[in-house]
Image 1 (cartoon, rainbow, N blue to C red):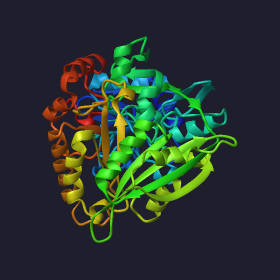
Image 2 (tube, one colour; image 1 turned 180 degrees about the vertical axis):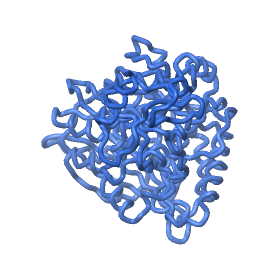
Image 3 (cartoon, rainbow, N blue to C red; image 1 turned 135 degrees about the vertical axis):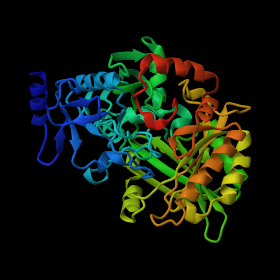
Length: 497
């Protein structure tokens, strides 16, 4: 009777050609059963509000943004409720079936995919969870938004703007799920002031690896709260969050400065951050025709009404090596959407769907020149494609999450150095680009750097992860055993393997 009920509920949510409904797990074959079999072997899945199916087409869940791996999930959960996630996680724990949330983010139906870069959110032979059905903005109040984890940052930002508020930190590609981004940190041009997106969360609702639903914050279940934020999906599945909001200005001015002298660019970038004369700051290195690099410092100044942004204050802290570049005025809403034409152009030119060996490292300010000597001394325009190397200063005093690992440094300051690569889809040596990433990673670690959990670093070993987390490693291994005793959550990260 239980099996029949489960089958009816699963089939009720399926469209034509969507795939076969899962009846249960065959413990002998270690495979899903879609037809009735010996009850001693097939363990029925619990009744669900949504669907658990073997998709007819798994392509949407078998690859991610990096496109380096194809890992076939054996079933996809489209939850009709948070309770569905709890039930499926409990079931998966019992039978040791791996589970991962696959953010399915993007700008539309034609580009929905996980935005992990190296298979982190893929789950071979296990259960992929599509969080998009849990995509409701429950409430926006002064200073905080109550949202489901499947909501994208762009959706929340535009909704918050209706109340005159905005997000403290807004990522460049904002069509990402809130839950997925909080699991890695989430950075943007305002991170110099506000830290990561994970630093701007008041509370979380989390399904642990035991299927327990827990509300956590700094004041309640703090260990889980701090483990899940920037936790790589290892300790729980974020299903809901209280995200901080700040008052929004009505307009923004973008000002740019270009450099040929790298040392001057680095000094000026740090000077702008220290002086707090801009609201948003990013730096880029871009390859020049014939070799060498051009450096760009891009700043955003927010303002409202008749007030004019104080560009003179920005210029006052810059050196004579800064050459003024383009300036643009726009509404704050247009500021939030300013990168949309870039993404559309990359898609139109065929770069978006290709392999993307990104690498994102945090390097102490005093060691950044040496690291850039290595990276920029070897990289070519062909290896980068139309993407830049982002070089932006950071201040560790606004980064409060203990799992956001910070580099060895003499001061509070360091640089994010990120290879935002979009090599041509027919690039002749993608394995060589990955090997190059590994060399760059090893060089950075030698300089005391730490990696961001986003990116493509091949051959990460347990020893690499232990070195990455340093003194926090023993605490995290304890929390992993406690929160995910069967080790089923997000195995693609490879952290505890």
